[in-house]
Image 1 (tube, rainbow, N blue to C red):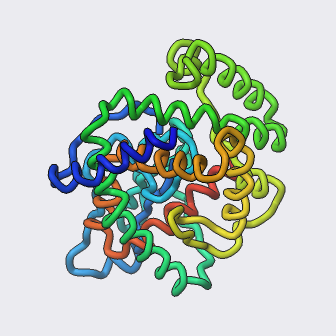
Image 2 (image 1 turned 45 degrees about the horizontal axis):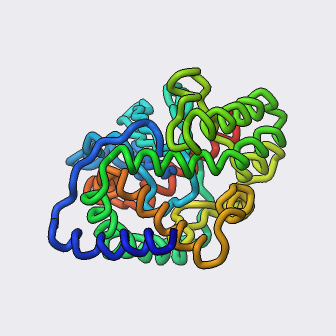
Length: 311
């Protein structure tokens, strides 16, 4: 396993340098999440001479470039109407078909984000940005060039299947026993008929879709607030609560118990590159169109996480 991953990564560097431009690929519903919201309130933008519309390029798989936790990625675009302007929400999530119906209510207000560590967070945002553009994306382009799309989708499905314990455990802790039972059925079906999780017959043939559940949501379900907003190196937007939840989830899924020591980290890198390779330059779109990408991502991610906890 180690030799295979090292060989693929070694090949990815020179190939990306030769190929230059990104190779556009497609992707099924399956792949982790950043959300992006218009960071500037309508009231402050209404008085500007040139009102900007933040639009992102059409994409099938927007993805948090630094989120490496397992899960599906699905794109949903919604506009939250206000008296003066529209807000474009691009939601990239670890769950398929996230429920964003709360955005259709014109009475909803944007969430106030507690960000006392903004100086530190902006430093981490800058660091993640450089890692993405200087390292992760070039390697992912090369990997994308040498691997067919069905292979990358199957890899994503495989790791998503290994993350089943996260969803099963947290659904049960929140009293969602039907969802917990569905996760067991999905794991059994996808591990057998789906050939070790490389395919997702549970959803495609039996209509059993997975639910987005994690430790951060469970803590929120029991009344623990998100605390200060926090940008983590390599991972991206989080909070004190969800950062702790992320660590708990990392030891709840199966990879740490399948691969030991260096093999686990080689596998994690491979998994991360596969996720980035499945993306269609979503982060580049945010960087291009948002006046302040940091605020854009911070506000949208916080709004999305709040909605997950409330639902």
